[in-house]
Image (cartoon, rainbow, N blue to C red):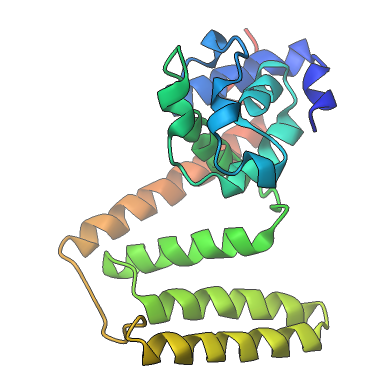
Length: 217
């Protein structure tokens, strides 16, 4: 991943930079690669890529690798990178923007389970205004187990079911799993926001297909 950050593609760089800056509201041009964010990144060692490298991929116009990497999906939004940055660049907002762009362009994540987790969280929040543990984990596991079944990995599907049943039973026994359905006020407004987001996503997709939107001047 890191060597690719040295390949400069001027034609696509400006388009990608402008889009990320506008959507994240972060001036990534101000990054001078001091790597203070890298030293504090809580998932950098696991993902193999740090915020400074990610910003470098954007600056050099490596769109494919900027959208398809482990950091975009595994960033925990701890904002340690932003507090350490001398130019106040919140890299967490950059990774969140790239995650949205990745979904809009139907990029398959390196680890699909993480995408399933995010989808389950959003679905639960949209429906009830809050996340309910049973529904949340049920939706996630259906997607996860379904992936194994589609690929004819029946042993993995069975092992996953056994693992989650045992884990669920243990959590319930220790009163760490709640069966009660929780809701919140303003659910209709949340659903409206979600519908607006989906509509905007569809519009962006159509604009990109037709060549409208983020273009070189």
